[in-house]
Length: 101
Image 1 (tube, rainbow, N blue to C red):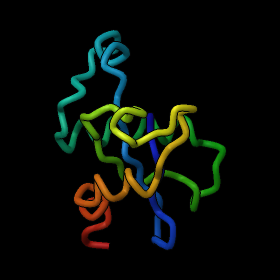
Image 2 (spheres, rainbow, N blue to C red):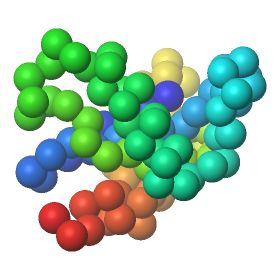
Image 3 (tube, helix red, strand yellow):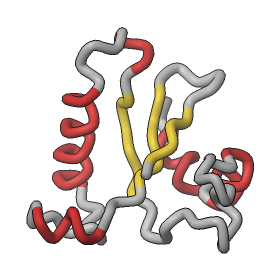
Image 4 (cartoon, rainbow, N blue to C red):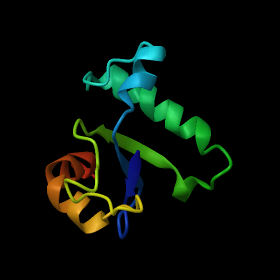
C-alpha cells in the first residue's frame, strides 16, 4: 500500500508499506532502508508511472513498517486512506523526504 505526499510541494514523494509475502517471493528485505534499497524501490515505482507527466512522478520514497489497517485508524473499513492521520503519524518521514529541498 502506498500514499503519495506532495500537495503544495515541489515534487511528489510516497510512503510505502511493503507486502511482506510479496517481498519474500522477490527476495526483498522489507526492513532494509539503505539508500541502495530505496533507489531500487523508487525505480520500481517509477517504472509503473512511466506514462505520467514529470510533475506527477514519485521522486522519493520512505518505507513504513507498520501496516495501515482500520484497527490503527490509518485506513477506513472500506480501505480508503486517512491521509491526515497518516501524515500526522509519519510526519518525521515526510519531513525527511523533503529535507534539503
